[in-house]
Length: 195
Image 1 (spheres, rainbow, N blue to C red):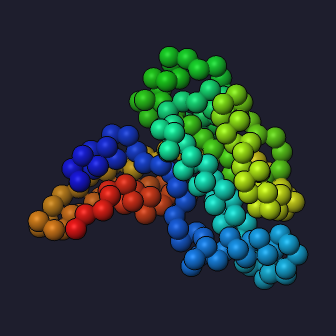
Image 2 (image 1 turned 180 degrees about the vertical axis):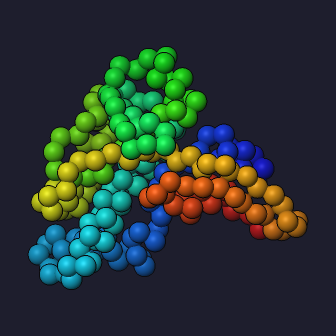
Image 3 (image 1 turned 60 degrees about the horizontal axis):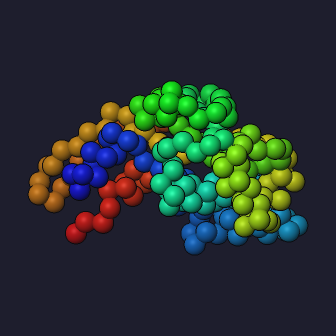
C-alpha cells in the first residue's frame, strides 16, 4: 500500500473516466448505441449518452497504453497536453527534451475523444488510435455523425497535494485535489486490493 501511495504521489495515475459515467452495467453506452441506430431519446439524455460513448472508447485506448506500459511515457507521434491546462501541442519528433518534460510531469501524452475529423497523432500513436474505429465501429461512426469533433484528453492524471495519514491500523485518510473532469475513483483504483 505504501509503495502504491508513493507511486501515485510521484507519477500520477491513468486518467480513466469513472465507471459512473457509463451507468449501471454500461447502460449509457448501450443507450448511445441504440440512439446511433435511430432510437429516439430524450433530448436531455442525449449528451449523457454521447459522453458515455466517447469516454468508453477513450478508456479502451488508455487500457491498451497501460498494458503496453506507455500511458505515462512517450510514443512516437504522440500529441501532448501541458500539465494544469487543456493546451495541446505536437506531434513533434521524439527528443530527450520531450522525454524529460514527460518524466517531470510537465507534459502528458494524450488520447482521442472520438469525433469527426482527422486524428492529430502520427506514427505509432496514430497506428494504435486507428484501431478504435475498427474495434468500436458503431460507437465511432455514431460520434462522428453526431457532429462531435476530435478532441484530446491527457492519458495521465496528477492528484495535486496528494497526502495520506493512517487514522488507525485499518483507516487511511487521503487528501488530494483533482482538475475538472477527473475521477477520484481512478486514483483510488490504483491503491490496489487490501483486506
